[in-house]
Image (cartoon, rainbow, N blue to C red):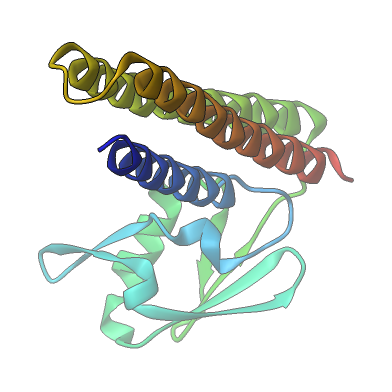
Length: 185
């Protein structure tokens, strides 16, 4: 029983780590990469569609992305969605493709992104601790109902604490790597 609770908690914590990785990928580092636009939604014939389903991406230079829509009639909507996105770049349209040149990150903007990275990291750690709390409540309920012994419950809580530490350390490492990437000039 306790093993099932720990496995479920580990699975949820792993998904939290994956979500944190996606969030960090969306934070700009000064280099262009298609992952920056993974959360951009385009109004395509009345429904919101992810940009990555509507176009292909190419990175010809370190700070430039070429976006080639599969349907040229969606060019205007894609350009509008890119302008409204949080990426902070101005798209230019040549009639067939959209070229996005990322401005050089200023020191002030880098510090803002570091702060954003730390905030997202802390949010991930809070989510991991919430998964821990729910699992601990389940273990405590098993002990209270007499389904498992107190020693087994204590062992389960120690395993849960070790699991939680492993995942929070993983988030700290992700934050540290992203900060180093952001501050690299």
